[in-house]
Image (cartoon, rainbow, N blue to C red; front, side, top):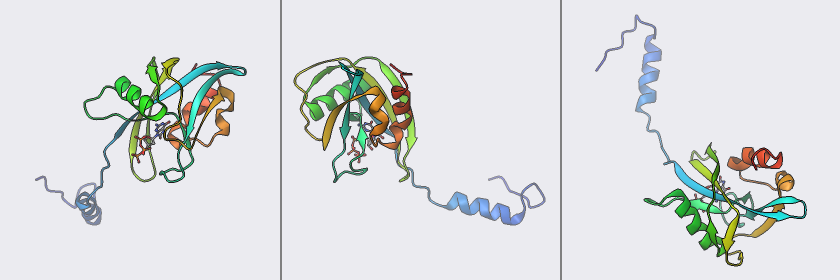
Length: 164
Ligand SMILES: Nc1nc2c([nH]c(=O)n2[C@H]2C[C@H](O)[C@@H](COP(=O)(O)OP(=O)(O)OP(=O)(O)O)O2)c(=O)[nH]1
């Protein structure tokens, strides 16, 4: 172990403080890998995207998000998203290109890595299986929805026509 001498750049109390901080247990929540879909269609007011509202009894209740969820161990991102879209909306989706990747730290200390993929084609009739509500929203109307914090940069870019 390297000895820290009080005559150097740190004084004795600073050294003690450093050691105390190193001794404190830090709680590390694992990074959650999440995938979500921008399901697009041509609407009367330009391109529309499917937005979904979380249930009242879920964490971050009634916030809006894009359909998707966590990648399971050993699963690829596209496969995970296809599985989630089948579970949540009953569709068999063709997963297109990845349009954004965002790292976000929520205030509870949990960090997520979010990847967004475009979906322009799917088979099956859309069915709301888990959400409070689902809606087709025009890109310019997206800022009117109360989205999860991690999504806000993407919402701004989409609504300003910067991404699609
Ligand atoms: N599906 C989706 N999740 C998002 C978005 N933005 C965002 O921060 N998330 C977060 C919310 C959740 O913490 C996590 C997705 O996890 P999940 O869908 O499997 O499960 P969950 O909401 O019940 O969340 P959790 O309590 O299990 O962490 O990613 C988004 O646009 N779509």
